[in-house]
Image (cartoon, rainbow, N blue to C red; front, side, top):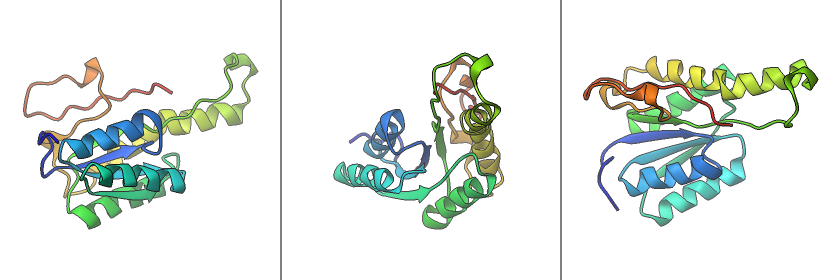
Length: 161
């Protein structure tokens, strides 16, 4: 277990499977307390079990990032449980049918945008509204846009779903 994130609190949206689950476990291995957010409660609890198996501490909060109120509750529960939030990996995303935009229904298009794009935006702004958030060590989904001089917030918005 490394100590890169010792004493930090990390939040992973879309942490119930895939890259999000792996990131949550890696955060724990690096010493962070981890909050896992996702829509699937059973999968979320499985991720928390994996975090505990590597000696970490975690909390699952059932969250749909397309719902602003749920994202606010997520951040509130994070701060209530751990007293702060240092690192966020905004990973939640969905894949719909692989069809052309011209063939997609407006409902499918809106659902994808609400989760993959607007969900990241919601999590960023809800997180920033908390006074217990430690901005200088914040990290968002990695991309070239997230590079900034040391000591400054690194904020990058990206979706790979």
